[in-house]
Image (cartoon, rainbow, N blue to C red):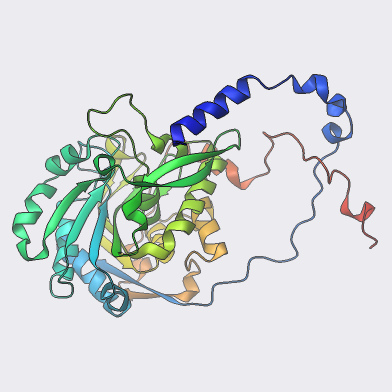
Amino acid sequence: MAASAVLSSRRAGAQTQPDMQKIQPNLQGEARQQNRMIPPHPGPFPPLEKRSAVGLIHGEDRRKNVYEALLAIDDRIQPKLKTKKYVLIKPNSVGTVGQLGMTHVDALRGILDYLAPRFKGPVVIGEASAGETMQAFENFKYTALPAEFKQQKITLVDFNQEAKYVIMPLLDFDLHVVPARLAARCFDPDAFIISSAVMKVHNIAVVSLAVKNMVLGAPLHQAPKETPRWSDKRRYHAGIRQSLYNIYLTAQRMQPFWGAAVIDGMEGIEGGFGAGGTPVPSRVAIASTDFISTDRVGAEVMGVDANWLGWLKYCGEVGVGQWDLSQIDIRGTEIAAVQKKYRLHPDIELQLKWMGPMKEMPPNLGWVRPVTDYIPV
């Protein structure tokens, strides 16, 4: 059954549900009045022992910064790169106008400069913009790249037009499981996938870096001229807690297919995102084969507490990648030398409510009494 049909049938089912208060007389009883008393786990997740390496370059040339950040981790890239049939570069072109906050063509040139002597296969630059992808490619001058880099056999692909997808189960606002259609190329085992991200703050994720570029850039919407209009990107805007969990869940599924992450911080954005933000001249580029490490370093460069980033914290704790700074080797400039404290989105207090107790949901059923009532101490 198509994803849209699944959602329609669930909505119809929800409208015909019986009045639960009439068939559950105990709604005013023990479960309503007792607080949740599930004991905490005795210890945290086991740490990820594998060290990672992150290239951090500071300079006045965007293209050169990106190239040198990748060069700094060349030993980590090449073993996986040489096993792939093509390279997929996923830029951040969520919008079609306004260069600030979108992947700059010179960042792509820096990636292609690095690839030129190291990979002889084709290169795809692909995106599922919230607008018209090919219009974004033209406006941001990506269309000039195939002629500039003829030997690299570059093609530009609109994931929405290609319309090939995998289904990702997500949580919606009501904590129901719903399907989202994500671009199939983001899960292609033949591709060496490079996230070409921008350093900016965000209204849900707190910051938007390499992971968010992959996760929120993969959901599709209708192809050009297709009707009716639809967008599965909206599935990720499902409430603060739900959105952070969905980002983590999707990143965990994508991780085996990831190749390298690049964050272009030549000109970051604070205070908002896109046209609503203010440029910050950070003048850096960050790269790693570990996307979680890339974003941890990116957050540090922005002066943002990584513990505020629920999606990153989940990914780090579960082992999607390394987020412990003591296990990350910085190659190039030291973080302290380039750190700037970015002004966050005006909704930051609301964004951080995920860190506290969940008061907006009804109490648990089942284990409503202290665990010591059941297990002798």
